[in-house]
Image 1 (tube, helix red, strand yellow):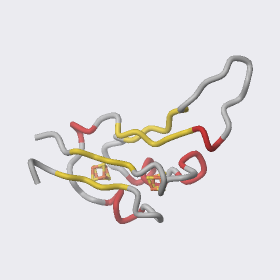
Image 2 (cartoon, protein in one colour; image 1 turned 90 degrees about the horizontal axis):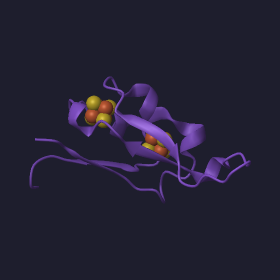
Image 3 (cartoon, helix red, strand yellow; image 1 turned 90 degrees about the vertical axis):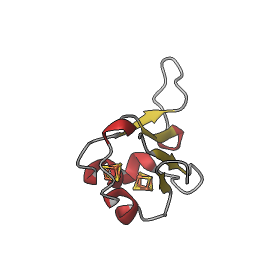
Length: 80
Ligand code: SF4
Ligand code: SF4
């Protein structure tokens, strides 16, 4: 069963600067990706978001939830 990993974008306001979940995850499932890309322009730090890219690799250690300073990450397993 692949866990559902949700990141509340309102709580995770500065992922480009934080990245704590990316650093702690033993499975490296998270990535920070730009939400908008404009040609010839650097993407502003607020225009990035954390994405759970490799959800299927999650081992449910919950370290990301513990480390997240804003409580932005929620993980649900199964139908609950
Ligand atoms: S629970 Fe563990 S393995 Fe799963 S995303 Fe969080 S840190 Fe990574
Ligand atoms: S640890 Fe929390 S606040 Fe920091 S980048 Fe990850 S989801 Fe966002």
